[in-house]
Length: 202
Image 1 (spheres, rainbow, N blue to C red):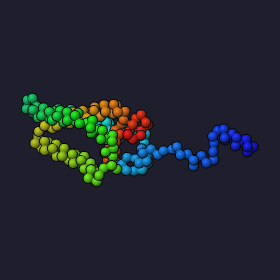
Image 2 (cartoon, rainbow, N blue to C red; image 1 turned 30 degrees about the horizontal axis):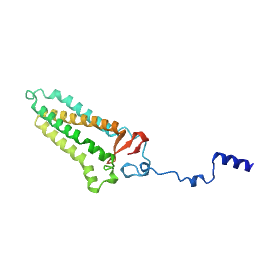
Image 3 (cartoon, helix red, strand yellow; image 1 turned 90 degrees about the horizontal axis):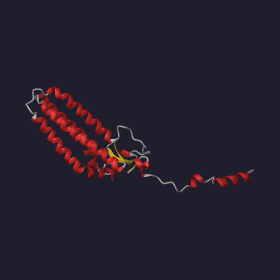
Image 4 (cartoon, rainbow, N blue to C red; image 1 turned 135 degrees about the horizontal axis):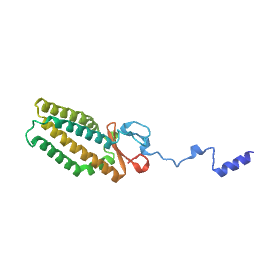
């Protein structure tokens, strides 16, 4: 019976030491360390909110909704809404600036420069404080306009932000499709995963 079993195992390629003799397995960098500095496998399909373009989409929709609501509050604004046009002009300028620089910026993201483990301490601090500081400044400007009754300027600001966010969102989608990658933003890191290799980090 034993010779027969050994013959079958030989034909099937079975070996009792197979588990310890497999040298062809390689550790993928994507599974060695997850984003944000925590060890563990990188998930093939990151959550919906962690996809960078979805965060931009929600932000753009929020600014658009705020701008639409403010249209009812600018009835007493000067004819032609000069503040509105000023806000739109600022938005156009910022959108053009991003249009000219997004390829270089996203190439840096793809190279791993914005992964938290690859940042210096100063870069981590700046990145951690950038969003809170921007939010506080925006809230302060909005409060100043509201207290001064300058709703046309708030509308201009909202329209400018809408233009910036929608441009940002569109260029991000275009970049991802051209490079067959998805940009992920989570835990202080921004990186890309390759859609052609089942979620392996680029």
